[in-house]
Image (spheres, rainbow, N blue to C red):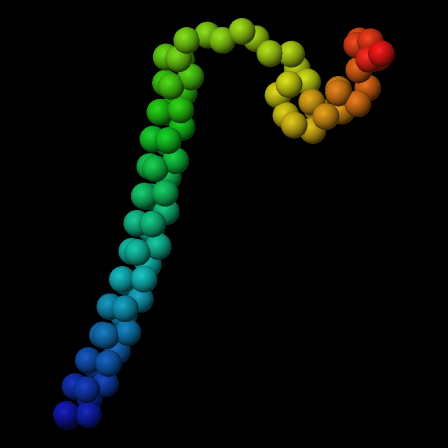
Length: 80
């Protein structure tokens, strides 16, 4: 009788641990989703609220494209 009670307690302990793990995983996924949605909305609002800057040329958006443009551009004169 005591052995059955101990087995039941151990089984219930494992079930409780499994429920805690499942709920922690679900809570983590929900929290990450809410955080991502909040971050995206703040970023969108920030982009809408900031003053408009001069539009940049398409090559100036990334370093790689800027380097490629600088290597190919020949619109300057050679120094004497």
